[in-house]
Length: 443
Image (cartoon, rainbow, N blue to C red; front, side, top):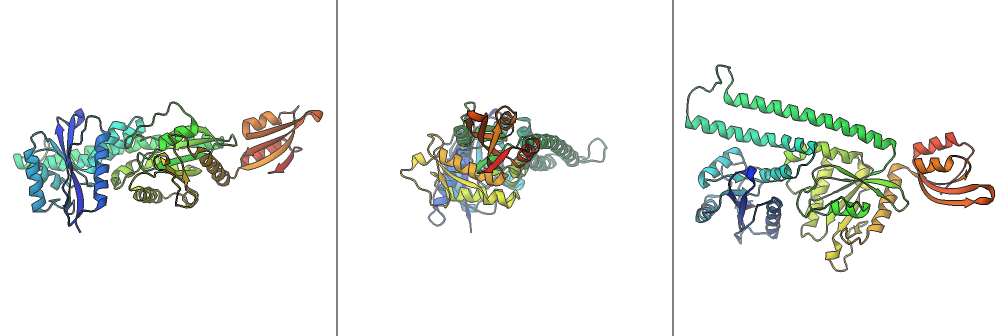
């Protein structure tokens, strides 16, 4: 069965200069058209619009063969597309909305059309490159570039062999040009992986320190551009967070302190968004970032409920989460949030236990905080206790420091107080050892 492919044409100088104008032609074939194809094109357009100075002018959907074969299109469709390209003098590149095209296919198409041809991997990787801010994100992008560099190297060596003959060896070293460059790429890849491993160990140390403080951690995940950062900003009130309406605006793990209804502190972790058919090498390169999710106490799955393909987006996110080999209790306790309900009149979730919110306008946030608190208490084993303390002793200041104090009822006649607290297991053990005579009541 032939699949559909949206084709993008680009105009500009070089990829690094970012001065590109993209054209995607759309043509509908009654024997292969499906409504999902338009949504795939819309996502391809969104990918293009994410990049500064890239512009979408037109688009086309045509049936494709296996993208790993030499020719992606049938002869007739290839001829139609070639004629369209030649009629547009300002077009300077083509984007095929397939995960990867082989180096042979890329070479054949670029030879036929006389311009660069990009696949989904190349475009998404370039978006990542533009959005990478931290050292770790830049290293992960560099690691994801290695397969692309290897593919381009094969093309370059093939063209050299065709254009000129002569010795294939470098200065009598016994290594061919291809072998030398492959060795350099292997060394580069090893160096990047070693640098990422150092950052992974540093993150593990920070995670251990955070665990000692018993701060619950909530990982906020979802399809790209579903509103994760906006939701975290609404939950924490952090003014410095600046959500952007674009794909893959967040590439780094970022932590943000918040407070639940019981005044219990919690850390919300913003993560990279997912995408349908996100190239495997990109997911693998960012596995160091995504592994942080496995150590969280709760996952909040944010969905853009207004998107026509919200069900497919949910399936994509759940598929990626399962592939991360997360603990089963994390997947079972996950909170599903239907975001952007302000754009749908009188919206009510059909999924059981899903919560409807508008992160932008604050609708449903209190209910969401209460649900997060309920799940956090279960996941962390924290206890809600009421203790009788002597106000002349150090118990109250200790509880404020080591636990979450909810209520303090002072009884001035005997200088005591009833204190309602949320306290972790280890802190509770320390409290009993330090103050063995304190009266404790389970709430």
